[in-house]
Image (cartoon, rainbow, N blue to C red; front, top):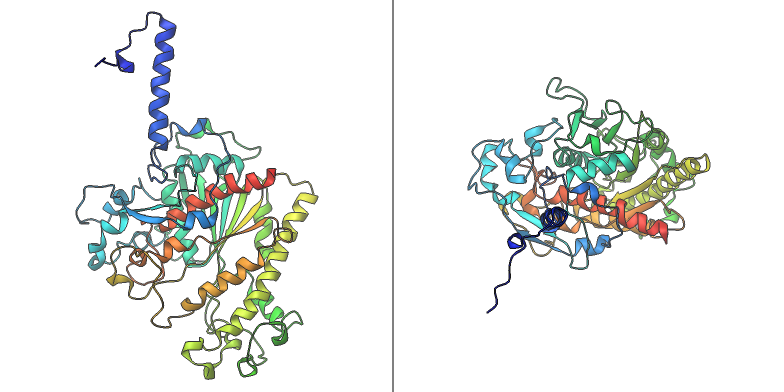
Length: 464
């Protein structure tokens, strides 16, 4: 059999040929490494990303969500003996944010350490129809500087997402405020990630006009549970825009009684578009956001919106949760109209920077989560009625239907990407069955798909 020489065995005669051959080998090696996995936490491997163009590749939210979890450990550790080991198990170099640091990483209850390393050993593999670049923190940072960062609005689940991003983008970002120095800072304060002045990728970034490494945030989180503030929701409740006749509430016996206030004493944190849209649409150095990421449903309950509570309806009817759902439908239309109007006005007034809004489907918790130690293959049916969890899918469906008309809200996109999380009852925080551990792949999957969507899917739609 003839022996085929390897590339390294070829002995070119001229210097130019040698250089060309060497360049070919290096390029091939980098390409093979970068694209050998569609989902990777090797976020420090940034040297090959800068030649990647913002190419059009396809993967709808539905295609992304129709994948599966695959066991793919990244460490030889057989058990967790120190909290900091959770970082390496997840493939993180560190995390920039520090509020409730060990809670976010799932290491605050030592009795739950037995879930490691398995809980950090799964990766999400989307449908084979998906063409998605590997997850790369440095590439995300570069894109956020050049094309706009992310403003995250939501409840404590969105704060989970923000913390995970601070790990994905580390060491290229720094975080404020410093909760280690002052743990009494209010949870409603805005948390920010800024480009770190020591990041090695800075020379490769094309800085927008006015962008400040010190003052312009790349990613921000603001606690906004309901997307509209209490005063605006109360006014909507008492207005002609909302009435029982205009909703799908079925039986007269379930109609909410007119109350002086929509709310009781249960605490919540929220703002309205008139308060956060000016921040989103602002320009450097104060802001450079391109994408507003929102998610809501968890606090739309009959204990928060107590005017809708119906004790006679009983536990299995959510004590009148359908009344809340009917009001949610009206409130989210009001919200979408205000947000779209603000973006339209921005463009009329000469705004040219990309601005888009993505609504991430809300993820409910799981029952009995701390006794389940691996992903499920199907979504587990509800056995009990915990909070408003059994009805979260209804809230998601209402939001998705509202935004299905691209002509009415062209800059607001709904992302039904909750299924990967619905299959991970094992990925919850040590102290409850709602919040999520950073590094298990659920939160990181949100970042991966949103990054793909705003840099590929939205851009492709704009060109059609």
